[in-house]
Image 1: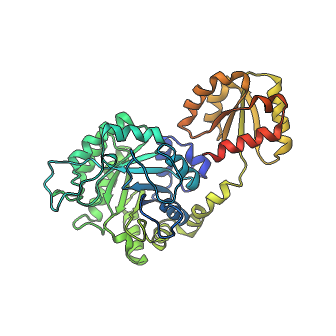
Image 2: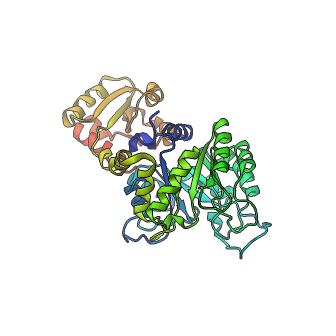
Image 3: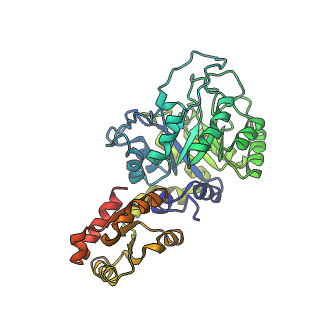
Length: 402
């Protein structure tokens, strides 16, 4: 398993939840998560906030204020079901969303902000997570929503039962409720409930939560096999770059695995210079530049194309015809019975099924969906003609669909 900070887009998008968790852990505190307000008009005007954050070094993208039942993402052409696939295609990074476990009985410090059902934690929204392909979910609360730690704790186990991705849980500020934002006991409860990543406020963002508190949380969570995310979510993500760098280094010293930078900036994303600043502070220029350009590289890299067949000679001949067209791609055929084994051994970009076994398409697609590997049946006409160019073109069309 590659470190997240070293993996390319194809490798990242094939990771399941545990593989993603391990790749974050292996990155040794150098993973940057950028949160952005998905429906808000970006300051560029014709591209998404996710693309902006990605371009300046973000490794993970967290969508805020997104109604998963009626999704709208500014700058993205999408329908109700393909918006995550489209973001995956554009940024090549893990995509997550905030769901908010609102507590209607919470003692409030401010007026309560009512939010749409599609932003709240409930059975319908949790089931949508796997349906549309989210890689992770963050159980947290926006200002004034009345999310409490008690409700987050209940939400963790409920989400675990209904979602296969990573679960991040915790508060980065009070969310309007009158209670401690984070402490060691809260972290222990969240880990016990099944959270993969414990969210805590970054040192320097919430009064009273200091380096000793964060070190204790990191030590406890790590001993239980979990990860820790420190969040700059108090509008300080819009501070000057020196402040951002100071916060980042303090939290890395304490042992956090993921550094979050919030959405309070221009058009619902942190100032781009601050995304770059936090990246350079915790991992230097080398990895920052690598993250900025890897999406360009992935579009030019060798593709691995697997043809699944019934062990006939005709498919092997088609492979030869395709190899004559493309010298850079790795193209090979194997019996369909060995597909599962092969995708676990090697990174595969696309699977083409021989038309003689098209009846297996549904089963293979279902298995490969979790690995984000596109699957399609080779058109009979192109297969019969052994048209390597046409079949190669079809393979690329599947990959370009995400």
